[in-house]
Image 1 (tube, rainbow, N blue to C red):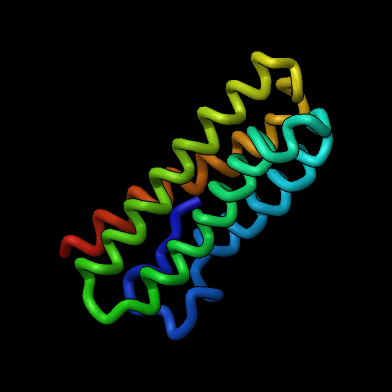
Image 2 (tube, helix red, strand yellow; image 1 turned 30 degrees about the vertical axis):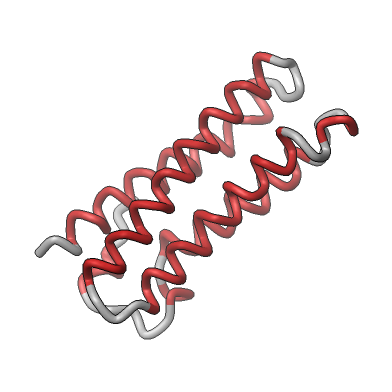
Length: 126
C-alpha cells in the first residue's frame, strides 16, 4: 500500500495511513510481547514496546513540525525504530519467545510501514 497522504500536509497526523499502521503495529507488539517470559519484562519486552511506540510518536511529532527538514528528521527516527523492532523480533524468535507464525502479521506491518516511511521521506525532499 502506498501512503499518498504526504502529498499535502495532513491537517492531523491521524489522517496519515503510515501513522494508522504504526498504531496497529504497536498494538500487535504489545500482544506478542505480552507472551514473553516474565523475567523479560524489563528487558526485551520493554525495549520492543518502546520502539513500537516510538514509530507512531515520531511520525506524529514530525507532522506537527513547521519545516520539511524537521519532519524528515522525525520520519528518519521512526524508520530507525522500525529497524530496531525487526531486530528485536528476530532475537525474540531465536530465543524462542515467539514463533514465526505469530510474528508474520507483525513483520508484514513492519515491512509496509518501512516502505511508507521511505516514500514519505523521499517526498519531503521535493
